[in-house]
Image 1 (tube, rainbow, N blue to C red):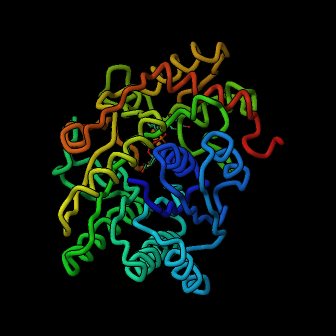
Image 2: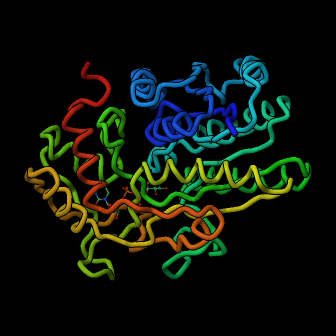
Length: 345
Ligand code: UFG
């Protein structure tokens, strides 16, 4: 059944792919985004890929002065529920400016909760992260693994999960899924939307892509002395289109659930690749050289983490389908068609 769904952070990397999938599934979408780490061009591109009803509210969920207007807009839209992706996500910056991260990420979540309560639209899919598992579990990591983030960014994800559990405990009308993403990479196969970091990329794939296109000289590999098969860090990379599809599945699943449900669900491919394996795969996909140098480990990094994605398969009938080759090919298509991200045209 077609629904009216709010997508906060819908102009961002993951949010834009989620918006496309929701529109393609027949839903109407209201994007709330302040473009602090995204570009208005993404909205135009979403419309090109997925014609349908898409409204935009350019406001900051964490700004108290915008809160009343956001609450009214969500009520007027007639929201049935939301996907909450808005937030800051740079791990290093979160260590330097923890208060900014707590006020932005937690403030945004609280404003959205208030708005959904006012609209009586108490269905929510929250963009959480595998970072909530820290380095305390054996691989593959299941949802009942021990949690404990190692930086303020990760703690905002963990705290929001906990806040949502408290809210659902206090008010049985809520239905909530916390999707714990592993490492989203790749781009829409059209090459029209993708990851466009504001600054020097923090994450592996956007960095590799910028080296391949010639915007950066070489990749720095953070550590080759981990207890992994080639000494470099191992992560569970998941194609952003597989990830987006998981949100549609999660919302569908919530529709069929009784009130009061709250579930943490991993979205990962269930396979780990090392940094050097990712570099080789990207080299093949792009047919470009990717020079790199080995440097010291990055503070806070762990050796290896990959998902047990069995619960998503069991509950949502979802599993990752796209290979590392497709992740690299699609990421490269986006990067080569948009060498400077959304700023080119
Ligand atoms: N890496 C490099 N060089 C780089 C960037 C990364 O060698 O320039 C290595 C890292 O050491 C790690 C792997 O590549 O072994 C993946 O690193 P990412 O930064 O891409 O991703 P992380 O696994 O570190 O995850 C981080 C946060 C997550 C967050 C995710 C996406 O810890 O919470 O980025 O933003 F969700």
